Amino acid sequence: MVEIRNNPCSEHNSTDEELVRLFLESRDNRHFRKLYERYAVKVYQKCLTLTRDAARAEDITQDVFVKLIGKMSTFKTGAKFSTWLFTITYNHCMDLARGSKRKVVLVHQECTELEECGEVNLPGLFGEEINLAMLKEALDQLDLEDRAMVYLRYLDDRSIRDIARIFHTTESAAKMRLLRSRRKLKKWYQKLAGRGDFF
Image (tube, rainbow, N blue to C red; front, side, top):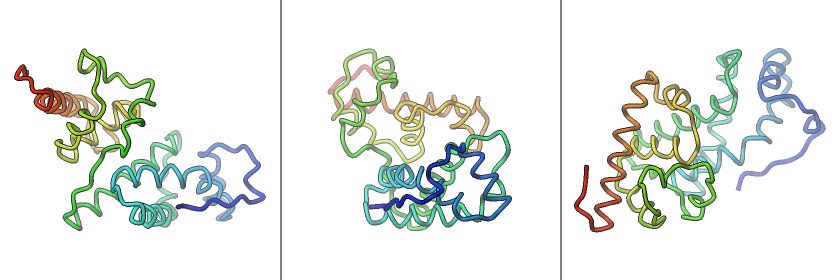
């Protein structure tokens, strides 16, 4: 598991964006270490969700932060650091998946994680009570990008703007892709439920 060690810099209350600026101005590793402390576990969890391989997720987490050092100067003023970091993490995982020809599974390991997402509008998506085990199985049937779309919007509560940025597309194109992904998910869910009323 990713280890987090406290340091003298960890008490200050600088925002993520301020820490990026301080690191770029001073090249003081304490500022980067603070960002690592805040996000290492979150990045690891994202990688674990994508790979379903704990050892591989830990290796990828370290790779992401090594890559981050080289990319810090490209961070744009006014952007949100957490969204930017997630984009780097997601793209790195996708690059590894394409390179190794291995299928990355973008689903939660436990159905309880679906239950804990209070803001998720999945009941509205299906118009009925959700069988979480069946939903997970339906997610497994989707291809990688469709799973990513559903995960980002409904399980990770990302905005359409964030999704468009991650997929390097326009907001209108992201909305259309999300709509298609939702339809595919609903079709698989209904198929698994033994219904024929696909739309």
